[in-house]
Length: 295
Image 1: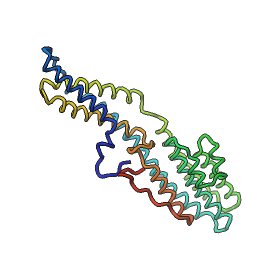
Image 2: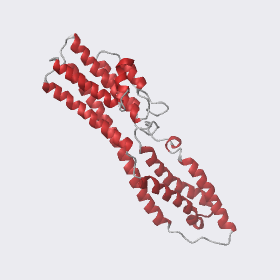
Image 3: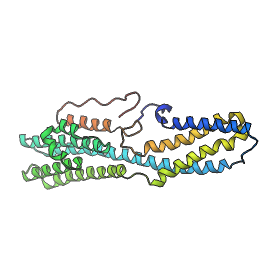
Image 4: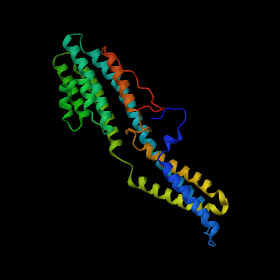
C-alpha cells in the first residue's frame, strides 16, 4: 500500500504508460493523415461517448474500491478480535504451570493463524511462518489440511475444550472465547469470498473494450478542432480514461502482493507483536515503508 502523501504517477499508473505511448503514435498518425488526405472524417459525438464511458468506469472503480475497503474492515476486525482473544485466554486460565502453558500455546497458535491466513490470501506457502511460530512438529497437522488457517482454528478449539475438561475455565468463559473464534472464522470467510469471487466478466471486459475504442476514436473527433495539437490533447484525455481503468484493476484484489494492495505483512506483524508482549515474548519491530510502500 502506497503511504506517501500523494500517489506517484510511475507506480500508480505504470501499466497505463505502454497504452499511452501507443495512443500518442496513433494520434500522430491520424493528425498527419488529416493534413495530407483530402478525405475528412465526419464529426463524432465524443461528448456523449465520453460521458457514457465515464459513468461505466465510475461504477467499476466504485465496485473495486468497495472490495478493497471491505477487505481492510475485515482485517481491522481481525486485529481487534486477536487482542481480545489473547486477553481473554490469559485472564480466564488459572495461574498454574499447565494452564499457563495452555494459554501460551493458544496465543502462539493464533499468531500462526493470522500468518497462515495472510499467506493463503496471497497464494504463498504458509509453512515457513507457521513452523517459525509453532515449530515443525506443531505446524505439521495443520499444514496437511487443505486450508491450514482453518486447521489452526480447529486445533485451538479442541485445546479450548481440553481446558474445560480440566476445569480451568467454565462453560460461560468457554462460550465467550468460542464466540471470538466464530468472529475469526466469519472474518476469514469474508476475506476468502472477496479473494475467490472476481468481478463479473462484464465489469472486467466491457470497460476495457469501450475505453480502447474511445481512445481510438478520440483523435478522429478532435483533429479538426485541435489541429497540430491533437497528439498532445488526445493523449492527455485518453490517459485520464486509461488511468481510471487502471485504478479499478489495481484495487479489485486487495489481498494481492502489489504496491496498491492491503499491507497484510504489516498488519500480521502488528498482531504478532501485541500477542507476543501479552505472553512475555519480545515483539518483532513494526514494518516500515520501503520506498513509500508498506507491505
